[in-house]
Structure formats: structure tokens, C-alpha cells
Image 1 (cartoon, rainbow, N blue to C red):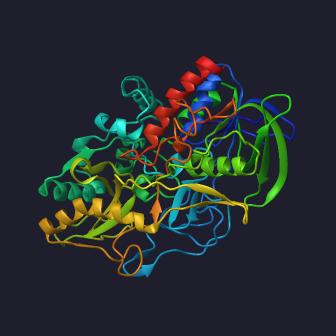
Image 2 (cartoon, one colour):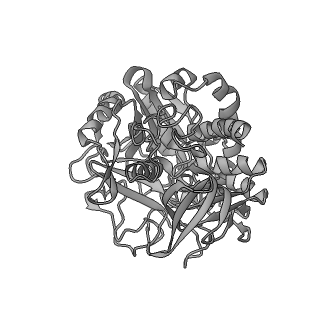
Image 3 (tube, helix red, strand yellow):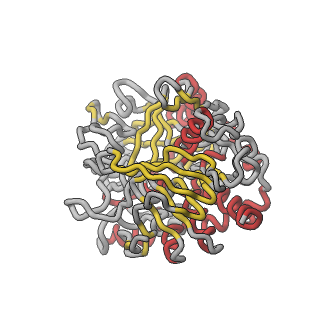
Length: 516
């Protein structure tokens, strides 16, 4: 078992090690994002020894600049997963391409390309919590039935959403400070424009420590949110899973993690439990060892894409023949679409912009869109407002095994994004008419308004109550569970990680109570 390591904020991170060939573990968790971290903590608190397999790095060692994570403005080999050139969500700025060549490395952000869509995912201990903007949004209760119809909303809102928010360390910005600080001038411009067009403007909780941000603004501590850190990790202030669920899991003494390990197969073991085949990777992505371990129970928590791809392959190749035909179905992009607006000179958005978004425009009931007012932390005045919209798109894709390549394909159609664009336009067309402004056309290519090529919020592929029972147990193979965003069918109406966390808390409660 490895030694407990200290995270970059000084709190104990989960113990890292390299699992041995032939090891036997009571519970194996594939992935260390939100669902996996919840499962690890609760299983350990129930007295179960847990080992987590994480494909990415542990992110506990500073680089040559003395920092663990790279800056958004200056990506290097830490920034992208096994790419030789960055693939940033904004590909252009002021007419110039901004991607750059980097060394191939097991970096923190994966831009995984499928037919018609690029899916951004976090790679490392802590999963997506390492690379998201930290917007900790609980969906409006009246929308929950459309998100997870088989789940008791009272139970979620009375027990599991509060538990998730507490476990994640969610806090809210000081409204008086928000109204005066330079770093949220861009968001105040967004508020003014939204309210003048009659839209509901909402403040959104976050897992970034706003007291730390105040100290950044005062010059008392190292800057992080105010130094453009977001896409490739955050060196201070942000409470990722390393500082919350995984730190608590480490404190139990029952949880270890093997970073730079990738699960390739899960099959029933002759003596009970499951035989799991795992590849160990180096930081160039090469396989340095292949190991076989036995696990009493296996939890799939590799994220919507990772879990779905693995399950589809295991079913198609006969490794897990009992899985049903719902595996791989119900995948969606949470309706993600991006855009920018060019403001007038009198509506400057500020050269200093906090990288942590805290506000959004809610037009879900009338137009099917919720838009976070996002930063453009370039370090210069842009006179631009930038938005990531979540829309009520009905489109769902399916993963399928490709016997010719040995890989897994996704049948997403680029044209489906038009629905999301139309819903986002329900907000921004109206604002542009009211303000006499236009869309920016220089952020996603040449004369391209919409960032319709991507998602930051992959969901579905092993949908609750279809591929699994109503608590994440996979059909056909007792002792196999799904406990991540692949359970949620394609859309949460807001940023999804609080819902993923709360659902994992609900499911692991039941699993511990009845299966262990």
C-alpha cells in the first residue's frame, strides 16, 4: 500500500500505489471522479477495503515552474492527454489560431474526438473535478422528474443533494463583493444585459473557496482564479475531489489508488467475483505492464464516455455476455453550445477576469436554455461577453463496438446541435437586439458564431433503470455496478456534477445496505 501524499493545498490526498499482478481486492473502482470518489468514501466508512484504478496521473508533483497545473494562457505538456497539439475549446482569438504544439504526455484534459463531436474530460486523480469551472448547481426541483424519472425527488432534495453539497465543499460568493470587485466586471455586464432583456439572472454556488479569491484580489495569497487557471487545473482555491471526498477517503486508511492504470477487461472469475485486466501506463501513454487482479465487486466510474465504451466492448466481445441491450444507449451532450457577443466600448468587461463562473441566465421554461456567463481570461480588455449554454436538447446517441478497429464508435450527428443553437438563440438574439450588439465570429474559427463542436458535460450510456436497475446494479452480472454520469440520460438542465454526486450518494447507500 502506498504512502499518504499531501495535495497542493496541504490536505491528505488518497494513498497512491501500483496495484500488484495477482492482487485480490474486495471492491475495485474504475475511475476516481465524482461517482467513484463517493463510492470509495462510503464503502471505506462501511469497513470495505477499496482500490481505485485511475487512467490519469495523481497530479501531486510540481513541474519545472514549481506549480502542479499549467496556466490556461500558456499550455504545455501538462495540458492535454496524449496530444502533440492542443485542442482548446476556443480555437481562435481576434482572427488568429491559438492552439500550439506540445510534447505528448498524459496531460490533464482529454479532447476525445468522435464522429461529429469532441468530448472534453478530466484525466487524473479527481477526474472532471480537476478541469471544470466548479459551478455547483442543483437543478430546480420541478425539473427533476424529467432528469431522473425513476428516482424519488423528495429523497434527493431532502437527503442526497444536501449531502453532496456538503461533501463537495460548496459555497456562495459574497454578493456585495461581487458587485464591486474588478474580477467580476464581466459578469456584471452579463447581468445588466440579461436583466434589461427580461431574463432571470441567477447566482450559482461553486466549489472554489471565495474567501481565498478575496485574498487573491487583495494580493495576500498566490493567485489562481485570478491568474487564469481553469482548463488545465487550479493550483489554489478550488476544492476538487482531491481536497474533499478523496481526502476523507484517505483518512479511513482503507482506500488506495493506482494512477496511470487502465482497465481493459472485466470477466466473471471462476471462484467468484471478477477477473480484471489492467494496463499500467507511462507518461508518454505507453503500456509498461499488464496485470490481472481479482475483485469481489467492481464499480464502473470512468465517466460517461469511459464507462460506456468499456461496457459496450465487454458485452460485444463476450467478456460480460449478460449485459442487456441498453448498454451504450441514451448518451447526450447536456445540450452544450458556446458563443460570444461583441459589446459596445462603454460596456468593457475588464482585463482581469476571475476564471471561476458564478452567474447564469435562466430561460429554461420559455426557451429551453440555461447559460452560464463565462470568463474570457485573456489578460486584456476584449469588450466581449462569453457564454456556455446548457439546452433542453432531445437528441441521444448510442455507442457501438467496431469489430474492425477494436474500438467503440458514437453515432452523434453534428446537425443535432442546431436544436441547441436555436434554444441558446432564444437568449442571445434578444439581448443583441436590445443592446444593439452582434455575435463574435472569431472564437471558433473564421466567421463561425457557435461553438457547436463539443461538450464538457457528457452524460448517459448506461442509463439508470435501463442498463442497470434503479440503483446502478448492472443487469446480468451480480456484483457489477455503475455509479457515475453514465447513469443520467443525456441532460440535467444545469451543470451536472452535483447531480452525479447526489445520485452516487443515493445509490451507494442502498448498495451498502443491501449488497454488503
